[in-house]
Image (tube, rainbow, N blue to C red; front, top):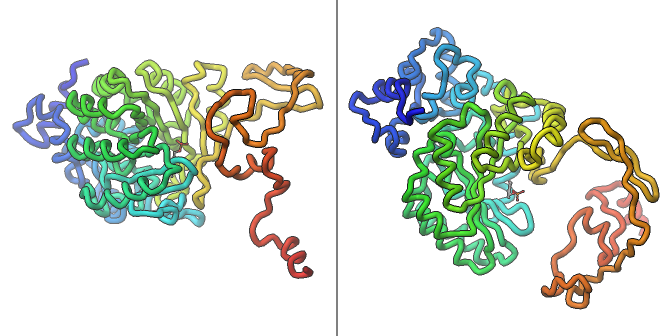
Length: 437
Ligand SMILES: *Cc1c(COP(=O)(O)O)cnc(C)c1O
């Protein structure tokens, strides 16, 4: 497939008569020509929306703005746009204005769990660092919809310093996840500087970048960018493909460049009603990703953010999809299905149950075909008491004695902590005990 086909030529011409192939493959051209209003969208896609509908679209844009790269728009089939997965991810739906009872502006409490500007610190050893306030394309299903189009800017070095300082002063952070917005909307130079700063921090062991540019702006993955990224290993990248139609000649080329630079690639999909809520579709998507050296990492249950209700499926849909993946296709084509806990509890994995029953010395399990089998527990297993004195342990970890606190259920299982139960705050029964004392 040529990288600049006839249809893309039409899209480009409708934006700018003088567009050449080298413009089309220039990522900055796409950012400059991003489609932001309904009139332009109609003109470029060569469709005509009914007048009444158009007014509602315009109202929706007032609350949740639009931005679509000409490249991503060119993937829409104008003959059947209404059900087109590319269209549905990029074009406003009046349903976005319908806020349901449970919807929240910031369901993951990313703003509340922010100890420094741009930082969300939720897990013990890693942080999310928002390094860009803008994206090439505004996904209609964005979980940070509350922020989309707000400030649309690239933070200055000075603004990023506060986040960097937090990481420098927080030695337990060994994994830094650059997100945004989209970090790849930063210039190569700025990103190079940022990656240099982050990787210079002694306790930071790995850096990851979350970007949707391979999907919506594959021309961003230039030889220069990749040559710069290569200097900052160990660097991991997660991208965001939701539908097999997004895997094109251009996006495949972008992925190949990143993989050839030795960057491990992962993908995070979101399960979206009417876009990809289908077993066969998700399996095809994951198989295609694997073929392009991308490991499906997470399949997200759609968050309860305001404006996303029409995209949400029941969790049962995701379970059904997982049931049709595990065992049916390569293990590395199966992502972990997660619900990001409302209130900031983090990602919770969910999957069908494979344990049928449990006895003192046997576990009864079922496989994907429905075969029920037994696993005999070893009779000779000697549980060793763990007192966290790793230096004296025969397993020879030979690292300093463990110092991390046990957290949650891990604490209940551990030998070195004598907690026997976890009790929610404000438990009335325990309250009565305290009152009596
Ligand atoms: C998803 C997420 C991470 C990374 O989680 P992993 O399971 O390690 O990929 C870190 N911080 C926040 C706030 C997140 O939402």
